[in-house]
Length: 392
Image (cartoon, rainbow, N blue to C red; front, side, top):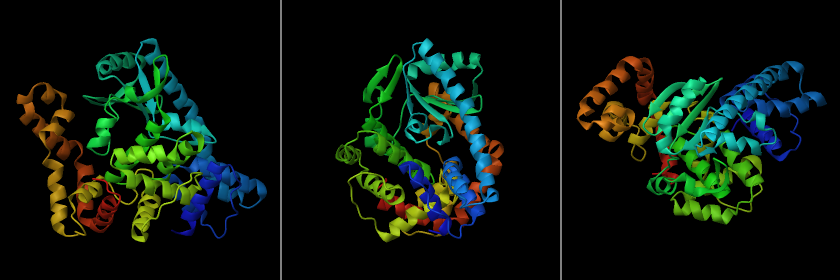
C-alpha cells in the first residue's frame, strides 16, 4: 500500500468516525485525487480535506480539484433525489409494492448522505408488475436503456434505475434465500417495503462478493458494510451464522476484518487473514476502483473463471475467448425475450448474439479479448483469491 492509498483510507476512516483527519505528510495530491476518483469517493475525501484547508494544513491549489467535484456531487444529488422521488410517487400511486436496496438506502447512514454516490438506484418489484411499470414510467419520461425478462434499466433526469424482480445471489444457497425478497422484509410503509437490517447487510455482502467474481470491488462497498454495522442494531453472531448458512462465512469474516483494519469499524470481532490473501485483496480493492476494473475489465474477469490453480498459460486465454461466444441456451433465453417465449427461435437468438458481439460491441470485445492474453498474471491472482475466499 503506497502513501496516497494509506492517506485515502485515513480520510474515509475520519469521515465514518466523525473525527479530524491527520495532517498529510509528503502526499502527492494529484495521485490522491486520481485514487479518490477511481474509488468514486472524491466528495467524501473533499469534506475532510476542507477541514485541513481551514486549519492551514493544505493549500487552496491542493484542495481545488476536490472542491470542484464536491460541488458537482451536491448539485447532482438534488437532481437524482428528485428522480428517485418521481419513481417512488409513481409506484405508491399505482399500488406497486417495492423495495429499495443498496446505495439508495445505505447512503442515509453516512455522516453526509449527499456524498455517498452511486452508479444507479436498485428497486425490487413483483415480476408481474414489470410490464405495467415500464409503460407508466415511459409516459413520465423515463428512457429504456436495456430490458430483460426480469429487469428494466431506465434513465431519468441523470439518474439510472435498475428495476428488477429478484435480488440474485453468489451461489445456489444465496440465490434460493433471496428468491422471495418481500418475505425478507420487516417493515412496510404503504407500498414501500424494507429488507430487515440483517438481511440487507447479508445481501450487500453477497453483492460485493459477486463483484469480486466479475472483476473486483472497491472501498465504497466496504464502507457500506461499515455504516450498517455502525448505525444498525445487528448482532454480529447472527450475521456470521446467516453467512454460514448461505455458504460464504469465510468471505464475510475476511470483509469484516478489512473493515476493522481500514475504518476501525466498532464490532467485537477478530479474524486472521493470510498475508498473501491480504496483499491480493489490497491490490484488487485499492487498485481496482469501485467496480474493480482499474486493474482489469470484463475480459480479465472471464479469464479468471477459466483458470485452474496457478494456471497462467495461453490455454486459459483461449478458453476465455471461446466463452465469449459459446453461451448456453439459458443465457440466450434470458437475453432475448422472443427466444424465451418461442424456443424454436433459439438459433436466431444465437445469430443475434454473434451479431451483437462482432458489430454492436466489436470494439469493446476486441479490448476484452486483448486483455485475456495480457492480464493472465492479474487474473491468476484474482482466481486464487476467490478460492481462498471460498467463492464458487
